[in-house]
Image: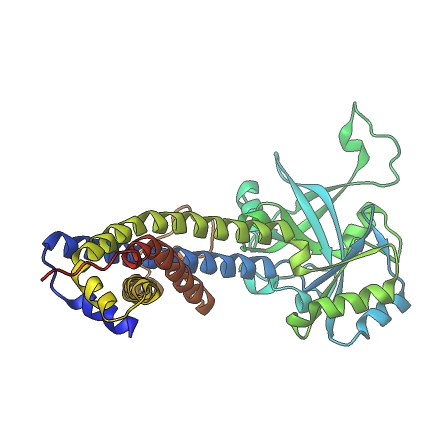
Length: 408
């Protein structure tokens, strides 16, 4: 019954045109606020998916590293037991260290990542090759796959480079660091480039991928010494359980991390930014709801005679309060529905026609990514409902407290 009264009050012509204007302004504010909330949250979802896909191209499902220090020891029996863990798809061994790559007079500090023949089974880097091929050679004839930023800085064409590149890596057995001749503490060898990859600037400007045997020889690692073991799994949702099983196989001294744990600060930052933006836009929506307070207060004043009649017929204060709370809920429902429809149209147009470009060129796409998530729609609608009910409470309570006053 209260919704019926609210609907009739919403449609009825008001004696003062200002009441209609304020009501439509308040509803328009809800439409715009709802659309803004959903569009912004959808953009954050799009960026989150984009960043996760870029990082998943480089980071494995699960990484096994040392608890302390740079290297770990994995024997053949340990590797066999790791590969036998249910859910493990492939395992690749990695040796990584900080080094220098040079081309003529240009020297660039890089992370030199040595990988084995299983690397492409655990990593998506093979699908990000921009020039040439993914070919790391072997220990005796190494080749290098350069990050596109490093290729640009060195001034080379990685797929057609004629002259080899110089590689410097610090020797573990070199003794004390020679301040007078720093390069004396480094091993120096040459490597040919085979191609370059393009993922994201964090990787493109810092990594060179080459043969694991080549890097081990330059650093001076033993046969069973590695920097990490990278593992791909059949079901990414089972990563926590497989991580636990791998940790039980290895015992203490090994750090086993899922992809989320390898990039925990990144994911936490993205989540924090999204929720902070949601809170700011909700505060803007609350400010806009003050229009609703004004519209409902004037509606209460407009319907004084109706309130008196209803009370004379036996309606109590709770029914009167529910009627005007329902009026606020109705405004929120119509405004929220219109805002959701507007947001869906905007997001669909962005997905189809790429209306809003993305400046800077840091990513592989040139438009703002958008992903609509059902939970965002429910969250925004729930937020609008709560805001509308709170905004309606004061006018509704005032209406409920109106005394009976009938005149002949």
